[in-house]
Image (cartoon, rainbow, N blue to C red; front, side, top):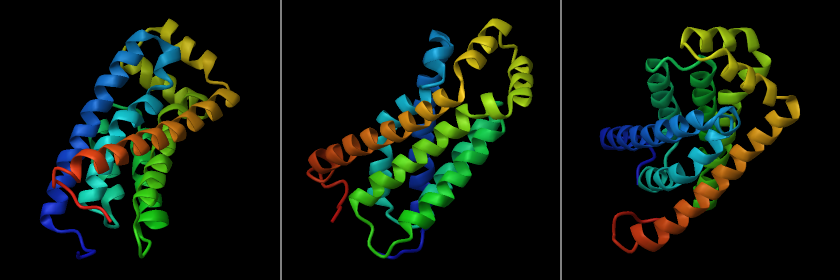
Length: 200
């Protein structure tokens, strides 16, 4: 298999990334409506179902550049819906890191795919939640611009202490590991058996 991305690879990456983004939007919307406490943990929850989609993508396109493209597409989509600017940056940076640290290896295994996805999920959690603490003024301004109630904003500020941010990022990592594990198990049991993918 060629290591260079083909037009077919770009199309498949785009389609499956869009699916992951839609799943993210559905879950994040539900968790944000439920309240500030559940809202801050949406990245870790999103990572679980998206693990199945990402493992399928990585099995079909196990090449360097997939994570970067995936992160860039999601970054653009988040910008289009008015997300805080730090989230797109984190997605692109996370994609580049995963591509160079994991997907650039001579031998890409299912285990390395799961590890890369877990790292990507943790970085996304950092990008989505940490600005609440470290870029508070800009974050509050963005929330107010989106007509978020002050009571809701105060609730998010209250629960995002530094120790809680660490918990949230770790939860993102764990969610990524769990999602990747479920994804690769599903991939082995169903996708390989169905002849949809072939993973060594």
